[in-house]
Image (cartoon, rainbow, N blue to C red):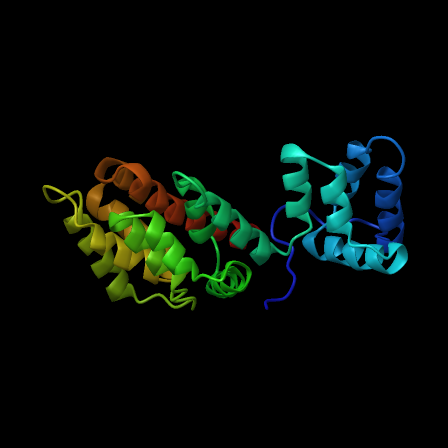
Length: 255
């Protein structure tokens, strides 16, 4: 399994003491009622890695499982959020994907949010966790709950086959920009497969170059064209990929 990460905006708590946090959590669940504010103050301000250390410390010092204790003391949405905070990132992703496809209807926004923004390694781990936890391949679950080109985009993302090098093939970038322009703005109807091939396979640096060239050719940025040419979940997933790559580029620039 991938190393414990710190995805998100929470930074490591200064003077972190997992034993002290474990005891505070224990105290918050003693007596009548539960001190939800104390639980929030601790768990919402610790990184994923720090929360895992608190879980270990709790079991060592209390002799019980922290998640089990919290589950028995809490209820409703607050319980769901708190238990989610105690999960490793890929476990939580698998859990959210499972919930998005349970029962009648599918929460497509959740599928998009997770699968359009994770790295190849993260997607591979999510696939493994999902199979282990729910005894079903994630791809099978997705194909059973989605359809059409939207389904094909998600399946492509689930293969975790995106080029993750930093190489930019200038000639290919120009060709890619030309092909997605000809597949959309320059014709009646839209050839979504061309968009899939470029947006789901090319690496970040290459895509940014494609987007630059696309704007020169079409006079519009890629997000505007996607909104003009697509609709529904397909529009949402392609926009999510484009926005994700733009945001990652900005993060790299400012780091």
